[in-house]
Amino acid sequence: MKILVVGAGPAGLMFASQLKKIKQDWDIAIVEKNTVDEIVGWGVVLPGRVPNHPANPLSYLSDYTDIDAQYIDEFCLVHQGEQAKASTGITLCGAERRSLVGALRGLCRDLHIPITYSSPLFDGKDLDTEAYDLIVIANGINNISNYFNEALVPDVEFGKNRYMWYGTPHIFDSMNLIFKATDHGVFIAHAYKYSSTMSTFVVECSEDTYHSSGIESLSEEEAKTFIANIFSAELDQQPVEVQPGLQWRNFVTLSHAKAYEGNLVLIGDALQTGHFSIGHGTTMAVVAAQMLVKALYDHAQVNSALEDFNAKVIPLMQLFSGHASTSRTWFETAAERMDLSAGELAKSFSERREQLPPLPVALAQALGMALSCKES
Ligand SMILES: Cc1cc2nc3c(=O)[nH]c(=O)nc-3n(C[C@H](O)[C@H](O)[C@H](O)COP(=O)(O)OP(=O)(O)OC[C@H]3O[C@@H](n4cnc5c(N)ncnc54)[C@H](O)[C@@H]3O)c2cc1C
Image (tube, rainbow, N blue to C red; front, side, top):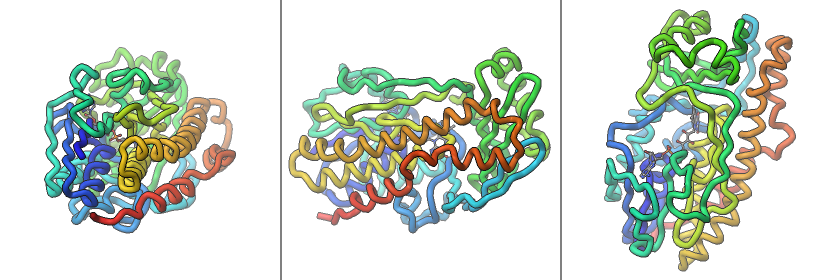
């Protein structure tokens, strides 16, 4: 079996490594658009303690201690200078994206899966689909147009808020949600530690606030200072930092009604993105990758495997999308709740997704089914 994986992010790397472990004689190769050093993003939260949580990609590494992951059990909402604290429900694991992706690439290297860097595949013309039994499209949010097949064009929705993914050397021990009502509108920070020296600091605000505060006309340096000043008390006067490739933007939700066409199949963000406020994108990428591995393990024919994968993954992705959109909308309408106390706001936050079937239960069921492959 000859397989090409497009994209060396968590989805492509998890898929390639886990499949290679059970099908050592299959020919699996990965192409990656960026150079080996270009890995965008600060830290992310993953579920559970390593190595026991199967949806946490760190659980699949032989040595995860280099990652400097940080565990978080407390949630803290800050509003009007008051704090409302609660348990996060499950332990969260903050991890640096660069270390995580680097370690998963190391895992692929150890399994002799070649990764070719600086090799963007931009459209079907670059791709000889007949040269492979299967092509796994795992190129993340970049999969926004009909690069590879018109039948796989996503439904694209832009979020109403602007956001920017900053990092900061201030250590936020809890999962923090900080609301700041200013003369220009409300700024919200999502902050948590992801290493012993750094925290993620994602800031969002409405489009109106983005424009009226003047951020759009500030230089990157001036915008950093402006944001650090708004949150100076919580940041303990520490700066926020930027990374090449990250800028203020609107969140893009990609959704697909079907996960495959012919011998092309989508996983990870390329299949379905979900707003960062539920912190599940990498987890969903890991789960979809495992589900595809299981389908290929169960079926001798690629087409039957893809049909089976599609039937199982699409309902899960629709549930993920429902949770993510509900959460995104809650943040987009946050200004309506600024009269609430910190405790009332925390209650509203925790209730925002209660109308939907719980995502962790669906994830556990999907993973339980997917993880029953044996080496052959
Ligand atoms: C602000 C923010 C915060 C987030 N926080 C969290 C969090 O706390 N927890 C969490 O689980 N998730 C979080 N996420 C989501 C998470 O980052 C993604 O869901 C995850 O990275 C998806 O993995 P992926 O492999 O599908 O895509 P990516 O990580 O985007 O990887 C895709 C890869 O494909 C490559 N590529 C692109 N185009 C091509 C091409 N044409 N040819 C070859 N290669 C290509 C890219 O360079 C990249 O390396 C967050 C996202 C954002 C924006």
